[in-house]
Length: 236
Length: 287
Image (cartoon, rainbow over all chains, first blue to last red; front, side):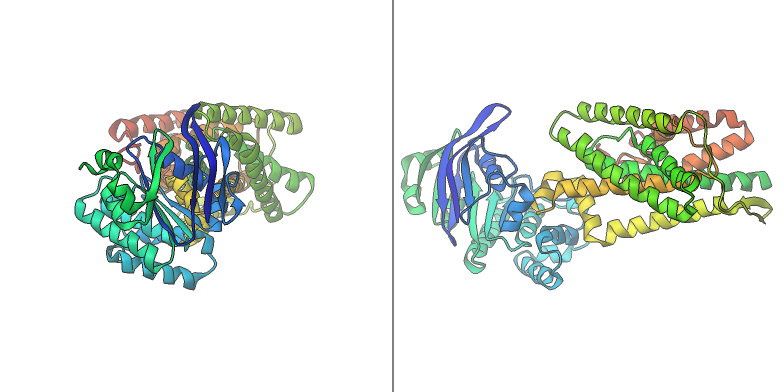
């Protein structure tokens, strides 16, 4: 479903992503692990089209998307839930969600249905429907960001560090929701995390990023046993 | 009392125009993150285009107004496309320079086509009537009513339509807007078109009352800029309220003291308000 072929990405002349190739099949639930500054966000921004690769190709459903503008990629069904949430702070929860469904804007009943499903995952959003997103706590903003990215019914959802800076209880809740997005909604999910414990417990397999290179990949059960991963990301 | 009411009436009329022009400026500022210094000059061009259709081609007033709004809307789209879009991702100073370049071009263009002498279009509604002891012309009342209608219309457009919501979304978080599938370039172009078309509307309504001249854009652009700062950068209600406040200050100051000091009052009010509330009337705590 997603295929990266020797992708290199530069930011301001610095090579951040170096020679990354990876492949994700339809229905998979895959983790991207790596410490701060390892290039996870840059890789996700490259896949979503916010950044363009210097060399290499990104294919989605057998179509090269690395030269397409971001909104075209969203229309194809690849949605990034970005780091820092990137919500619309002075718009209500309702409008943030409606804009999340922008590619479906002519289909009011589908938008209604998707919104109800988001409320099932995060009931608090329904209670705060008319509140501005900017007044929310970090955890609530993360819920809204995930909710917004589900509104357009993505085929592939990239989640960039959804647990960063959140309380353990909220991390647990968000982890459960992400797992059910993958299982119940049949959405392919690519999850980037520093919190390897959480990520390796819910995903099937993972890639480990270090200094912009993919240094390790495999099934989660194997990664959990790997000495390097345990030392660097689990702390055991 | 009559002098007071007369000045309030005039102030509201000036304020209506200021509010519309400032509204357009603030909309584009939200999208570009820089003030479009050429906005006053687009207003000036709108006045001349109306003059061209009305006085030169002999179309009716309303048809000329409509034509002027459409043409200026297209000018806005072209300007966004060829002047500002190529500068995306570059330092803001480049946008500043591009905006100043555009205003010099627009003023020189008007000077070359229509010449330096002031032009005026015949007032389509010169009738006057008395109300509460003050004299009003139909044209001036029309300015006030049209401005109010436009402001209400724009409010509903921004708050009740998806397209309006995308304009707010792009202003509040450009990358977030892209990631929801909004075509940010298209929204920018539409915002520019709205901004320039409404400036043309304001200029068309005022062109029977005031002389058109190629230099009229500079002072109005400057005032729109004051209003936007007065109201709080990027705030739509601030731009509207600021427009009416500036109109009233000028009219009352001009009426009671001297019309020659009109601009002194305007700039004085700006300094006063900013010294009390540095972020403007509706400004956010952090810019």
